[in-house]
Length: 276
Ligand code: NDP
Image (cartoon, rainbow, N blue to C red):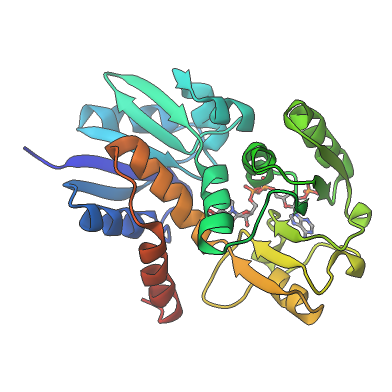
């Protein structure tokens, strides 16, 4: 039989690392599958999924800017997708769309398994209140932090997020200036690093014990990590491990096998640095 087909859909999609990651998972676990990148614009997702399912597609990852659209199209939502209000993983089953969101699990797996940063009892600052922040709050709260503060350039968005998730645990929201630390862990979930900008956080957010994570990643350290290093942060990490972590959880949902994410992360890091 032909290998099962999977894809990532989004816009832009040319530079997506997902095809490489899933190809490495498939090799590692001996699974026969193909994984491609499909450019899909806002408004084109339902048709793209229909076409893909009709031609043997079994599952799709959904990325910017289609995660909310995928949520709206889903026939069945996992609890974590419903809480996040966004979907990054679809399983195509007999014309039905079974939806999940693995972004938060990917972040928590990277923090705890790859990096060894304890979350239980930690004071955590989450910067940003967009889709990425929204997707990680429930899994972070599940890990049992002493405190989770969400801050954002537009403070009301952070307050609304905190209100939305308060039934799950201790979470507060506010403006950037409310980030009076020092925190044990700071997670940047803003898009500021894309423009080489750094959110205007108080210097006191960082102490000498503070570990700093930026969801963005690249061959060079991000602007946020550069800022944190200059303020004496204890440890730094970018979001490549989160990307591999969410992919590993999607792969497990589709194939019932958990790949070795750390090994694939190491390969990908090498390739990113060498420009391959
Ligand atoms: P959104 O557009 O939904 O949200 C953008 C957020 O960034 C808002 O909180 C916005 O604040 C804030 N922001 C943007 N520019 C600035 C700035 N100059 N200073 C301060 N705050 C700023 O984006 P997403 O939430 O979808 O994505 C955020 C980032 O996370 C992206 O860089 C993305 O690449 C990354 N990401 C990484 C993943 C991974 O696997 N590693 C997974 C998902 C996302 P305001 O509300 O005031 O506009």
